[in-house]
Image 1 (cartoon, rainbow, N blue to C red):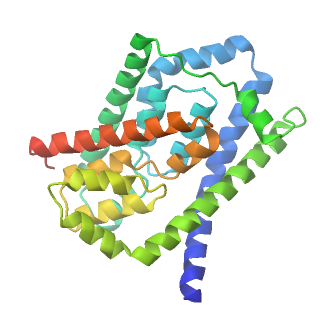
Image 2: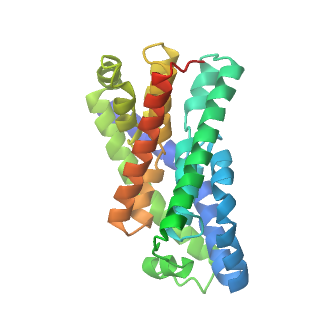
Amino acid sequence: MIDIFIDILKDTIIDCAKLIPFLFITYLIMEYIEHKMSEKTKSTIKKSGKYGPAIGSFLGIFPQCGFSVSATNLYAARVITLGTLISVYLATSDEMIPLFISEAVPINVMLKILGIKFIVGMLAGFVVDLVIKIKRKEMQEEKIQDICEKEHCHCENSIIKSSLKHTINITIFIFIITLILNVLIEIIGEEAIESFISNKLILGPVIAGIIGLIPNCASSVITTKLYVENIINVSTMLSGLFVGAGVGLAVLFRSNKNIKENIKIIILLYTIGVVTGIGLQLIGFSI
């Protein structure tokens, strides 16, 4: 039992260590924007958000979960739009590509799946931003310096020191959440989770979407393995991968203080991912 816990602890440490560079760079950029750039430049960055869903979706398809964390922090500071955040979440694939490569999945299959994730993420992001603009829904603005004040970091002293403090704080938070989840997954067992989803193929996208809500890389590993082993179809796998945003969802509740808004974002992400998966399944999509 102790050996198992030590293995879980090692895996958790490794997972968190991979995120540290992304976290530090993100906070460093945010600090730089706040302390070095003019108000006009900040305004330009925010206005460039109309292209954000395309950029976010493109960056999200790369095989890492660090960018979803970075995007979450940038959204909490209102540097990027909600549509851009949704695009990143939908496009993020975490461990899908490494698993595909290890299983010798043909490169054309990988590219097609990444292409679908990119297109769905981009289109959904543009639609979300358009709906918000049409309804003129007032989004609560929160300046980057507000985050600094909430963290009590004395940003004026050194942007590097402040960025390090932010990085350490959020890394500790991610470590605790990831450790708890890894322990739970070990107790429940991946095989039990796989059996649960594979025996309900009609509700596959719905169940895969729920698994996708697990805020770490386990969700992408489970759904990708099920697809590679021909237990679920590509539409079901995509549902789980669309919803799965890595630890970005956990960080959302840490960085963005509006709990109701966070819940709405998760519901929106889940709905888009599952509905898209069901739609692909109904038209008989296959690769």
